[in-house]
Image 1: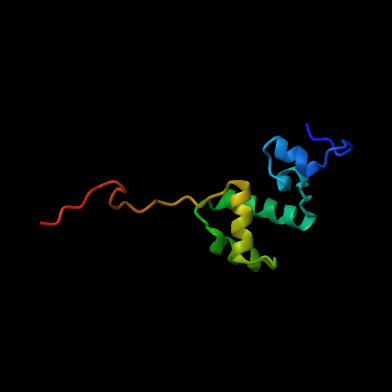
Image 2: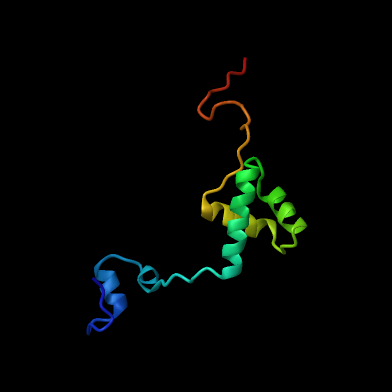
Length: 101
């Protein structure tokens, strides 16, 4: 669709196709080996302890010697589609009307 060798600039080609220029120029960066190793360990720990969230996961990884923060662990868990399994709170429904008498 978009050709870098075309005489029309890339930004004009993107505009003609109604694409953002940043999505045309985006090049994904490869994931580092250390991050892959950390993701593999997070996956292993999640299989053993499916109820563990990012904070407890960070603590478990730190006990093993990994230096990582809660936000980094949480971002990796989101990227892998991992979520802590626990009973969600049962409360009032979102669309429920409250009558005050």
